[in-house]
Length: 392
Length: 160
Image 1: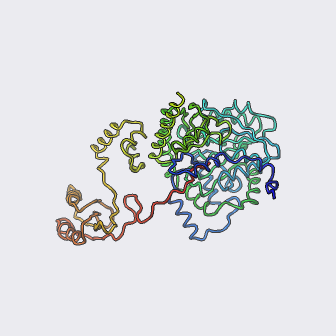
Image 2 (image 1 turned 90 degrees about the vertical axis):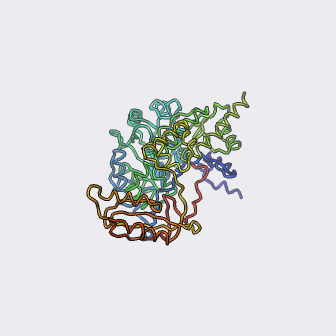
Image 3 (image 1 turned 30 degrees about the vertical axis):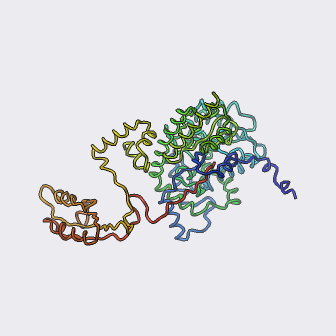
Protein backbone atom coordinates (compact mmCIF):
# COMPACT_ATOMS: atom_id res chain seq x y z
CA UNK A 1 0.00 0.00 0.00
CA UNK A 2 1.23 3.44 -0.83
CA UNK A 3 0.92 5.09 2.56
CA UNK A 4 2.44 8.37 1.40
CA UNK A 5 -0.79 9.29 -0.41
CA UNK A 6 -2.34 9.76 3.02
CA UNK A 7 0.11 12.50 3.96
CA UNK A 8 -1.14 16.09 3.64
CA UNK A 9 0.22 17.93 0.59
CA UNK A 10 1.74 20.80 2.53
CA UNK A 11 3.57 18.35 4.76
CA UNK A 12 4.82 16.01 2.06
CA UNK A 13 6.23 19.01 0.16
CA UNK A 14 8.02 20.26 3.26
CA UNK A 15 11.76 19.69 2.87
CA UNK A 16 13.58 17.84 5.64
CA UNK A 17 15.80 20.09 7.71
CA UNK A 18 19.26 20.34 6.12
CA UNK A 19 20.65 19.96 9.62
CA UNK A 20 19.00 16.56 9.87
CA UNK A 21 20.76 15.39 6.69
CA UNK A 22 24.10 16.51 7.99
CA UNK A 23 23.44 14.92 11.36
CA UNK A 24 23.00 11.53 9.68
CA UNK A 25 26.51 11.76 8.21
CA UNK A 26 28.12 12.96 11.46
CA UNK A 27 26.33 10.33 13.56
CA UNK A 28 28.18 7.56 11.74
CA UNK A 29 31.64 9.00 12.44
CA UNK A 30 33.89 8.76 15.48
CA UNK A 31 36.12 11.33 17.21
CA UNK A 32 34.37 14.26 15.62
CA UNK A 33 34.85 17.73 17.09
CA UNK A 34 31.43 19.18 16.56
CA UNK A 35 30.91 22.87 16.00
CA UNK A 36 27.51 21.88 14.66
CA UNK A 37 25.62 22.02 17.90
CA UNK A 38 22.94 24.60 18.56
CA UNK A 39 22.99 24.51 22.34
CA UNK A 40 25.15 25.51 25.30
CA UNK A 41 27.88 23.11 26.44
CA UNK A 42 27.09 23.99 30.05
CA UNK A 43 24.67 21.76 31.92
CA UNK A 44 21.78 23.60 33.56
CA UNK A 45 23.11 25.25 36.75
CA UNK A 46 22.59 22.97 39.74
CA UNK A 47 20.35 25.32 41.74
CA UNK A 48 17.81 25.22 38.88
CA UNK A 49 17.97 21.43 38.60
CA UNK A 50 17.65 21.15 42.37
CA UNK A 51 14.56 23.38 42.37
CA UNK A 52 12.91 21.04 39.86
CA UNK A 53 13.82 17.97 41.95
CA UNK A 54 12.37 19.67 45.02
CA UNK A 55 9.16 20.44 43.10
CA UNK A 56 8.86 16.75 42.20
CA UNK A 57 9.41 15.75 45.83
CA UNK A 58 6.68 18.17 46.87
CA UNK A 59 4.26 16.45 44.51
CA UNK A 60 4.13 19.17 41.85
CA UNK A 61 3.02 16.71 39.21
CA UNK A 62 -0.24 18.20 37.99
CA UNK A 63 -1.50 20.38 35.15
CA UNK A 64 -0.98 24.10 35.52
CA UNK A 65 -3.13 26.93 34.20
CA UNK A 66 -3.08 26.94 30.39
CA UNK A 67 -1.22 30.23 30.57
CA UNK A 68 1.36 28.75 32.95
CA UNK A 69 2.02 29.11 36.67
CA UNK A 70 1.11 32.60 37.84
CA UNK A 71 4.33 32.78 39.91
CA UNK A 72 6.29 32.12 36.74
CA UNK A 73 4.34 34.73 34.76
CA UNK A 74 5.02 37.28 37.50
CA UNK A 75 8.74 36.43 37.43
CA UNK A 76 8.71 36.72 33.63
CA UNK A 77 7.17 40.19 33.84
CA UNK A 78 9.72 41.28 36.42
CA UNK A 79 12.60 39.93 34.33
CA UNK A 80 11.34 41.35 31.02
CA UNK A 81 10.61 44.75 32.54
CA UNK A 82 14.07 44.92 34.10
CA UNK A 83 16.04 43.72 31.08
CA UNK A 84 13.92 44.66 28.05
CA UNK A 85 12.16 47.77 29.42
CA UNK A 86 8.64 46.75 28.50
CA UNK A 87 6.06 45.39 30.92
CA UNK A 88 3.21 42.91 30.54
CA UNK A 89 0.25 42.01 32.70
CA UNK A 90 0.92 38.51 34.12
CA UNK A 91 -2.84 37.85 34.17
CA UNK A 92 -3.50 38.06 30.44
CA UNK A 93 -0.48 39.22 28.44
CA UNK A 94 1.97 36.36 29.11
CA UNK A 95 1.73 32.75 27.92
CA UNK A 96 4.21 30.06 29.00
CA UNK A 97 5.04 27.75 26.07
CA UNK A 98 6.98 24.60 25.31
CA UNK A 99 10.04 26.51 24.13
CA UNK A 100 10.04 29.38 21.65
CA UNK A 101 9.51 26.77 18.92
CA UNK A 102 5.99 26.09 20.17
CA UNK A 103 5.37 29.81 20.55
CA UNK A 104 6.26 30.34 16.87
CA UNK A 105 4.04 27.45 15.84
CA UNK A 106 0.98 28.62 17.79
CA UNK A 107 1.52 32.26 16.83
CA UNK A 108 1.55 31.48 13.11
CA UNK A 109 -1.44 29.15 13.50
CA UNK A 110 -3.38 31.69 15.54
CA UNK A 111 -2.62 34.64 13.28
CA UNK A 112 -2.52 33.44 9.68
CA UNK A 113 -5.34 32.92 7.24
CA UNK A 114 -4.47 30.75 4.21
CA UNK A 115 -2.32 32.80 1.85
CA UNK A 116 -1.33 35.50 4.36
CA UNK A 117 2.26 36.56 3.75
CA UNK A 118 4.98 36.49 6.37
CA UNK A 119 8.30 38.31 6.06
CA UNK A 120 11.37 36.92 7.83
CA UNK A 121 15.08 37.54 7.45
CA UNK A 122 17.26 34.82 6.01
CA UNK A 123 19.62 33.01 6.79
CA UNK A 124 17.46 32.13 9.76
CA UNK A 125 16.56 29.42 12.22
CA UNK A 126 15.43 26.24 10.46
CA UNK A 127 11.83 26.22 11.67
CA UNK A 128 10.67 29.66 10.50
CA UNK A 129 9.82 28.83 6.93
CA UNK A 130 8.16 25.46 7.75
CA UNK A 131 6.11 27.05 10.56
CA UNK A 132 4.68 29.53 8.08
CA UNK A 133 3.98 26.78 5.55
CA UNK A 134 2.34 24.55 8.16
CA UNK A 135 0.03 27.44 9.07
CA UNK A 136 -0.85 27.79 5.35
CA UNK A 137 0.89 31.12 5.09
CA UNK A 138 3.21 32.29 2.35
CA UNK A 139 6.88 32.77 3.28
CA UNK A 140 8.61 35.96 2.08
CA UNK A 141 12.34 35.68 2.90
CA UNK A 142 14.31 38.92 3.22
CA UNK A 143 18.07 38.56 2.71
CA UNK A 144 20.68 39.79 5.19
CA UNK A 145 24.29 40.25 4.14
CA UNK A 146 27.78 39.78 5.53
CA UNK A 147 28.62 43.40 4.57
CA UNK A 148 26.03 44.56 7.14
CA UNK A 149 27.25 42.02 9.73
CA UNK A 150 23.98 40.26 8.91
CA UNK A 151 21.86 43.01 10.49
CA UNK A 152 18.42 43.29 8.92
CA UNK A 153 17.97 46.57 7.05
CA UNK A 154 14.76 48.50 6.34
CA UNK A 155 15.92 48.78 2.70
CA UNK A 156 15.94 44.99 2.28
CA UNK A 157 12.50 44.81 3.88
CA UNK A 158 11.21 47.51 1.55
CA UNK A 159 12.59 45.66 -1.48
CA UNK A 160 11.03 42.32 -0.48
CA UNK A 161 7.65 43.67 0.63
CA UNK A 162 4.52 42.62 -1.29
CA UNK A 163 0.85 43.43 -0.82
CA UNK A 164 -0.72 40.89 1.55
CA UNK A 165 2.16 40.85 4.06
CA UNK A 166 0.75 40.56 7.56
CA UNK A 167 3.53 39.44 9.84
CA UNK A 168 7.23 40.19 10.27
CA UNK A 169 9.32 37.58 12.09
CA UNK A 170 12.55 38.74 13.70
CA UNK A 171 15.31 36.74 15.37
CA UNK A 172 17.87 39.17 16.78
CA UNK A 173 20.55 38.15 17.63
CA UNK A 174 20.17 35.63 14.87
CA UNK A 175 20.83 31.90 14.63
CA UNK A 176 22.92 31.15 12.49
CA UNK A 177 24.60 34.48 11.68
CA UNK A 178 24.98 36.12 15.10
CA UNK A 179 23.77 39.30 13.40
CA UNK A 180 21.67 41.76 15.33
CA UNK A 181 20.37 45.33 15.00
CA UNK A 182 21.28 48.42 16.98
CA UNK A 183 18.65 50.88 18.17
CA UNK A 184 18.73 53.03 15.01
CA UNK A 185 18.40 50.00 12.74
CA UNK A 186 15.52 48.69 14.85
CA UNK A 187 13.80 52.08 14.74
CA UNK A 188 13.90 51.95 10.95
CA UNK A 189 12.43 48.44 11.01
CA UNK A 190 9.73 49.58 13.46
CA UNK A 191 8.86 52.52 11.21
CA UNK A 192 8.55 50.13 8.27
CA UNK A 193 6.29 47.79 10.30
CA UNK A 194 4.00 50.66 11.28
CA UNK A 195 3.89 51.98 7.73
CA UNK A 196 2.97 48.58 6.31
CA UNK A 197 0.70 47.70 9.25
CA UNK A 198 2.69 44.56 10.03
CA UNK A 199 2.47 42.66 13.28
CA UNK A 200 5.95 41.77 14.59
CA UNK A 201 6.84 38.35 16.00
CA UNK A 202 10.15 38.94 17.76
CA UNK A 203 12.14 35.85 18.81
CA UNK A 204 14.78 37.19 21.21
CA UNK A 205 16.07 33.85 22.51
CA UNK A 206 19.74 34.92 22.15
CA UNK A 207 19.29 38.42 23.61
CA UNK A 208 21.29 37.74 26.80
CA UNK A 209 24.19 36.62 24.62
CA UNK A 210 24.77 40.09 23.19
CA UNK A 211 28.46 40.95 23.42
CA UNK A 212 28.70 44.46 21.98
CA UNK A 213 26.40 47.23 23.05
CA UNK A 214 23.06 46.75 24.69
CA UNK A 215 20.35 44.45 23.36
CA UNK A 216 17.30 46.49 22.37
CA UNK A 217 13.91 44.82 22.06
CA UNK A 218 11.70 46.13 19.28
CA UNK A 219 8.76 45.80 21.72
CA UNK A 220 10.29 48.55 23.85
CA UNK A 221 10.30 51.15 21.05
CA UNK A 222 7.54 53.78 21.16
CA UNK A 223 4.27 52.48 19.72
CA UNK A 224 5.62 48.95 19.16
CA UNK A 225 4.37 47.08 22.21
CA UNK A 226 0.86 47.05 20.76
CA UNK A 227 2.02 45.45 17.50
CA UNK A 228 4.69 43.07 18.80
CA UNK A 229 4.55 39.57 20.20
CA UNK A 230 7.75 39.17 22.20
CA UNK A 231 9.07 35.60 22.35
CA UNK A 232 11.73 34.44 24.74
CA UNK A 233 12.84 31.34 26.58
CA UNK A 234 15.31 29.68 28.89
CA UNK A 235 17.23 27.36 26.55
CA UNK A 236 20.20 29.51 25.62
CA UNK A 237 20.68 32.00 28.45
CA UNK A 238 20.12 29.51 31.26
CA UNK A 239 21.40 26.40 29.43
CA UNK A 240 17.97 24.72 29.61
CA UNK A 241 17.46 23.39 26.06
CA UNK A 242 16.09 20.01 27.09
CA UNK A 243 13.56 21.52 29.47
CA UNK A 244 11.58 22.92 26.52
CA UNK A 245 10.36 26.08 28.18
CA UNK A 246 9.71 29.55 26.79
CA UNK A 247 7.11 32.29 26.74
CA UNK A 248 5.19 34.76 24.62
CA UNK A 249 4.23 38.28 25.73
CA UNK A 250 1.92 40.58 23.80
CA UNK A 251 -1.43 42.32 23.57
CA UNK A 252 -4.11 40.39 25.51
CA UNK A 253 -6.33 39.51 22.49
CA UNK A 254 -3.35 38.00 20.63
CA UNK A 255 -2.14 36.06 23.69
CA UNK A 256 -5.72 34.84 24.15
CA UNK A 257 -5.80 33.61 20.51
CA UNK A 258 -2.45 31.83 20.92
CA UNK A 259 -3.63 30.39 24.22
CA UNK A 260 -6.59 28.78 22.44
CA UNK A 261 -4.31 26.86 20.08
CA UNK A 262 -1.95 26.03 22.95
CA UNK A 263 -4.81 24.86 25.16
CA UNK A 264 -6.11 22.35 22.61
CA UNK A 265 -2.75 21.04 21.48
CA UNK A 266 -0.44 21.28 24.50
CA UNK A 267 -2.66 22.02 27.54
CA UNK A 268 0.27 23.54 29.37
CA UNK A 269 4.06 23.40 29.55
CA UNK A 270 5.54 20.76 31.86
CA UNK A 271 5.11 21.85 35.47
CA UNK A 272 8.60 20.63 36.37
CA UNK A 273 10.13 22.84 33.71
CA UNK A 274 8.00 25.76 34.88
CA UNK A 275 9.25 25.29 38.45
CA UNK A 276 12.85 25.23 37.19
CA UNK A 277 12.14 28.37 35.17
CA UNK A 278 10.90 30.25 38.25
CA UNK A 279 14.20 29.47 39.97
CA UNK A 280 16.21 30.48 36.88
CA UNK A 281 14.59 33.91 36.73
CA UNK A 282 14.63 34.49 40.48
CA UNK A 283 18.25 33.47 41.12
CA UNK A 284 19.96 32.61 37.84
CA UNK A 285 21.19 35.93 36.49
CA UNK A 286 24.67 35.81 38.00
CA UNK A 287 25.32 32.32 36.65
CA UNK A 288 24.01 33.39 33.27
CA UNK A 289 26.37 36.36 33.14
CA UNK A 290 29.34 34.10 33.93
CA UNK A 291 28.40 31.86 30.99
CA UNK A 292 28.06 34.89 28.72
CA UNK A 293 31.56 36.03 29.63
CA UNK A 294 32.96 32.67 28.62
CA UNK A 295 31.08 32.71 25.30
CA UNK A 296 32.46 36.19 24.71
CA UNK A 297 36.09 35.03 25.11
CA UNK A 298 35.49 31.97 22.98
CA UNK A 299 33.88 34.09 20.27
CA UNK A 300 36.85 36.46 20.17
CA UNK A 301 39.18 33.50 19.86
CA UNK A 302 37.35 31.53 17.16
CA UNK A 303 36.51 34.55 15.00
CA UNK A 304 40.14 35.72 15.10
CA UNK A 305 41.37 32.24 14.20
CA UNK A 306 38.88 31.78 11.34
CA UNK A 307 40.01 35.08 9.84
CA UNK A 308 43.70 34.14 10.26
CA UNK A 309 42.99 30.84 8.54
CA UNK A 310 41.49 32.72 5.61
CA UNK A 311 37.82 31.98 6.21
CA UNK A 312 36.51 35.52 6.28
CA UNK A 313 34.24 35.94 9.27
CA UNK A 314 32.37 39.02 10.48
CA UNK A 315 32.21 39.60 14.23
CA UNK A 316 28.88 38.16 15.43
CA UNK A 317 27.52 40.69 17.94
CA UNK A 318 25.36 38.08 19.64
CA UNK A 319 24.49 34.35 19.95
CA UNK A 320 27.13 31.59 20.13
CA UNK A 321 27.61 31.17 16.41
CA UNK A 322 30.32 32.27 14.02
CA UNK A 323 29.27 32.31 10.38
CA UNK A 324 32.42 32.27 8.23
CA UNK A 325 32.49 32.56 4.45
CA UNK A 326 34.00 29.30 3.22
CA UNK A 327 33.54 29.45 -0.54
CA UNK A 328 36.79 31.38 -0.93
CA UNK A 329 38.31 27.89 -0.85
CA UNK A 330 36.65 27.16 -4.19
CA UNK A 331 34.11 24.80 -2.65
CA UNK A 332 30.43 25.28 -2.00
CA UNK A 333 29.42 25.41 1.66
CA UNK A 334 28.10 21.84 1.48
CA UNK A 335 31.22 20.43 -0.17
CA UNK A 336 33.42 22.33 2.26
CA UNK A 337 31.51 21.03 5.29
CA UNK A 338 31.53 17.44 4.01
CA UNK A 339 35.21 17.51 3.02
CA UNK A 340 36.19 19.07 6.37
CA UNK A 341 34.26 16.38 8.16
CA UNK A 342 35.81 13.57 6.15
CA UNK A 343 39.37 14.87 6.11
CA UNK A 344 39.64 16.38 9.59
CA UNK A 345 36.55 15.26 11.47
CA UNK A 346 35.29 18.71 12.33
CA UNK A 347 31.57 19.33 11.90
CA UNK A 348 30.18 22.71 10.87
CA UNK A 349 26.69 23.14 9.46
CA UNK A 350 26.40 24.30 5.81
CA UNK A 351 24.77 27.74 5.67
CA UNK A 352 22.12 26.64 3.19
CA UNK A 353 20.52 24.58 5.98
CA UNK A 354 19.33 28.03 7.11
CA UNK A 355 17.96 29.10 3.74
CA UNK A 356 19.39 29.81 0.32
CA UNK A 357 20.88 33.13 1.50
CA UNK A 358 23.30 31.08 3.57
CA UNK A 359 25.06 29.91 0.41
CA UNK A 360 28.84 30.16 0.73
CA UNK A 361 28.81 30.19 4.55
CA UNK A 362 29.01 27.61 7.33
CA UNK A 363 27.80 27.89 10.90
CA UNK A 364 30.36 27.17 13.61
CA UNK A 365 29.03 27.03 17.14
CA UNK A 366 31.61 28.12 19.73
CA UNK A 367 29.68 26.78 22.74
CA UNK A 368 32.39 24.20 23.37
CA UNK A 369 35.57 23.96 25.44
CA UNK A 370 38.72 25.99 24.73
CA UNK A 371 40.66 22.78 24.09
CA UNK A 372 38.13 21.71 21.45
CA UNK A 373 38.08 25.15 19.84
CA UNK A 374 41.89 25.24 19.66
CA UNK A 375 42.05 21.73 18.21
CA UNK A 376 39.19 22.42 15.77
CA UNK A 377 40.82 25.58 14.44
CA UNK A 378 44.11 23.72 13.90
CA UNK A 379 42.28 21.07 11.91
CA UNK A 380 40.32 23.64 9.90
CA UNK A 381 43.57 25.46 9.13
CA UNK A 382 45.18 22.24 7.89
CA UNK A 383 42.18 21.54 5.70
CA UNK A 384 42.06 25.03 4.19
CA UNK A 385 45.81 24.86 3.45
CA UNK A 386 45.31 21.45 1.86
CA UNK A 387 42.51 22.80 -0.34
CA UNK A 388 44.67 25.79 -1.34
CA UNK A 389 47.61 23.56 -2.28
CA UNK A 390 45.34 21.43 -4.44
CA UNK A 391 44.00 24.53 -6.18
CA UNK A 392 47.47 25.92 -6.89
CA UNK B 1 39.25 40.20 37.22
CA UNK B 2 42.57 39.61 35.47
CA UNK B 3 41.85 37.63 32.22
CA UNK B 4 44.64 35.15 32.93
CA UNK B 5 43.15 34.31 36.34
CA UNK B 6 39.72 33.98 34.77
CA UNK B 7 41.04 31.53 32.23
CA UNK B 8 42.85 29.56 34.95
CA UNK B 9 39.61 29.27 36.88
CA UNK B 10 37.32 28.38 33.99
CA UNK B 11 39.68 26.70 31.55
CA UNK B 12 40.55 23.69 33.69
CA UNK B 13 43.89 22.39 32.54
CA UNK B 14 44.81 24.67 29.65
CA UNK B 15 48.54 24.83 28.97
CA UNK B 16 50.23 28.23 28.83
CA UNK B 17 50.48 27.78 25.05
CA UNK B 18 46.73 27.21 24.83
CA UNK B 19 46.03 30.16 27.11
CA UNK B 20 48.22 32.32 24.90
CA UNK B 21 46.17 31.25 21.87
CA UNK B 22 42.83 32.00 23.50
CA UNK B 23 43.88 35.41 24.79
CA UNK B 24 45.81 36.34 21.65
CA UNK B 25 49.03 36.87 23.60
CA UNK B 26 52.43 35.25 23.32
CA UNK B 27 53.37 32.41 25.64
CA UNK B 28 56.03 34.70 27.10
CA UNK B 29 53.30 37.25 27.93
CA UNK B 30 51.34 34.58 29.77
CA UNK B 31 54.40 33.45 31.73
CA UNK B 32 55.23 37.04 32.60
CA UNK B 33 51.65 37.58 33.76
CA UNK B 34 51.77 34.43 35.91
CA UNK B 35 55.10 35.53 37.44
CA UNK B 36 53.62 38.92 38.26
CA UNK B 37 50.57 37.29 39.87
CA UNK B 38 52.93 35.21 42.02
CA UNK B 39 54.97 38.27 42.89
CA UNK B 40 51.80 40.11 43.92
CA UNK B 41 50.84 37.08 46.04
CA UNK B 42 47.56 36.75 44.17
CA UNK B 43 48.51 33.42 42.67
CA UNK B 44 50.04 31.55 45.63
CA UNK B 45 51.11 28.42 43.81
CA UNK B 46 50.04 25.20 42.15
CA UNK B 47 48.86 22.02 43.82
CA UNK B 48 47.20 18.94 42.40
CA UNK B 49 43.72 18.22 43.72
CA UNK B 50 43.90 14.62 44.92
CA UNK B 51 41.23 12.22 45.97
CA UNK B 52 42.41 11.74 49.55
CA UNK B 53 39.43 9.61 50.50
CA UNK B 54 41.14 6.85 48.58
CA UNK B 55 42.24 4.37 51.26
CA UNK B 56 45.60 3.85 49.64
CA UNK B 57 46.49 7.47 50.22
CA UNK B 58 46.46 6.77 53.98
CA UNK B 59 45.94 10.42 54.83
CA UNK B 60 43.96 11.39 57.91
CA UNK B 61 42.39 14.80 57.93
CA UNK B 62 40.77 16.78 60.69
CA UNK B 63 39.37 20.22 61.31
CA UNK B 64 40.09 21.83 64.68
CA UNK B 65 38.21 24.62 66.37
CA UNK B 66 40.65 26.61 68.48
CA UNK B 67 39.83 29.22 71.10
CA UNK B 68 42.57 31.74 71.87
CA UNK B 69 43.30 34.55 74.27
CA UNK B 70 43.74 37.69 72.17
CA UNK B 71 46.86 39.74 72.79
CA UNK B 72 47.15 43.48 73.21
CA UNK B 73 48.23 45.07 69.95
CA UNK B 74 48.21 42.00 67.73
CA UNK B 75 44.86 40.35 68.52
CA UNK B 76 45.00 36.79 67.24
CA UNK B 77 47.60 37.30 64.53
CA UNK B 78 50.78 36.23 66.29
CA UNK B 79 49.34 32.94 67.51
CA UNK B 80 47.50 32.26 64.24
CA UNK B 81 50.68 32.76 62.24
CA UNK B 82 52.61 30.54 64.63
CA UNK B 83 50.04 27.76 64.34
CA UNK B 84 49.92 28.12 60.55
CA UNK B 85 53.64 27.37 60.27
CA UNK B 86 53.26 23.72 61.30
CA UNK B 87 53.52 21.35 58.33
CA UNK B 88 50.42 19.51 59.50
CA UNK B 89 48.32 22.64 59.01
CA UNK B 90 46.89 22.94 55.49
CA UNK B 91 44.69 25.98 56.05
CA UNK B 92 43.96 28.28 58.94
CA UNK B 93 41.21 30.88 59.21
CA UNK B 94 40.11 33.43 61.80
CA UNK B 95 36.38 32.93 62.36
CA UNK B 96 33.45 34.79 63.83
CA UNK B 97 31.29 32.91 66.33
CA UNK B 98 31.95 30.44 69.12
CA UNK B 99 35.66 29.87 68.49
CA UNK B 100 38.50 31.88 67.00
CA UNK B 101 40.54 29.76 64.60
CA UNK B 102 39.45 27.00 62.28
CA UNK B 103 42.47 24.87 61.46
CA UNK B 104 42.56 22.20 58.74
CA UNK B 105 45.23 19.61 59.45
CA UNK B 106 46.36 16.37 57.84
CA UNK B 107 48.67 13.59 58.88
CA UNK B 108 49.76 10.08 58.02
CA UNK B 109 47.78 8.52 60.88
CA UNK B 110 45.25 9.26 63.57
CA UNK B 111 48.05 9.15 66.12
CA UNK B 112 50.09 11.71 64.28
CA UNK B 113 47.21 14.19 64.14
CA UNK B 114 46.33 13.47 67.78
CA UNK B 115 49.94 14.06 68.79
CA UNK B 116 49.97 17.37 66.93
CA UNK B 117 46.86 18.53 68.78
CA UNK B 118 47.88 17.43 72.24
CA UNK B 119 51.59 18.21 72.09
CA UNK B 120 51.91 21.15 69.74
CA UNK B 121 48.60 22.94 69.60
CA UNK B 122 47.03 22.60 73.06
CA UNK B 123 50.27 23.29 74.82
CA UNK B 124 50.77 26.71 73.20
CA UNK B 125 50.40 29.54 75.61
CA UNK B 126 47.26 31.46 74.71
CA UNK B 127 45.36 28.43 73.38
CA UNK B 128 42.32 28.11 75.64
CA UNK B 129 40.73 25.01 74.13
CA UNK B 130 40.61 22.83 71.02
CA UNK B 131 37.84 20.67 69.54
CA UNK B 132 39.05 18.22 66.91
CA UNK B 133 36.73 16.72 64.27
CA UNK B 134 38.13 13.97 62.09
CA UNK B 135 36.89 13.85 58.51
CA UNK B 136 35.24 10.56 57.61
CA UNK B 137 34.53 10.96 53.96
CA UNK B 138 34.86 13.57 51.23
CA UNK B 139 32.11 14.35 48.74
CA UNK B 140 33.61 17.36 47.02
CA UNK B 141 37.25 18.47 46.88
CA UNK B 142 38.15 22.01 45.70
CA UNK B 143 35.23 22.09 43.29
CA UNK B 144 35.60 18.48 42.11
CA UNK B 145 32.80 16.04 42.89
CA UNK B 146 33.93 12.64 44.22
CA UNK B 147 32.27 9.25 44.02
CA UNK B 148 30.23 10.37 41.03
CA UNK B 149 31.19 9.07 37.64
CA UNK B 150 31.97 11.78 35.11
CA UNK B 151 28.75 12.31 33.23
CA UNK B 152 28.90 11.37 29.59
CA UNK B 153 28.03 14.34 27.45
CA UNK B 154 24.66 13.62 25.94
CA UNK B 155 24.65 16.49 23.48
CA UNK B 156 23.80 15.60 19.93
CA UNK B 157 26.62 16.22 17.48
CA UNK B 158 24.49 18.41 15.27
CA UNK B 159 21.47 20.36 16.44
CA UNK B 160 19.48 23.31 15.13
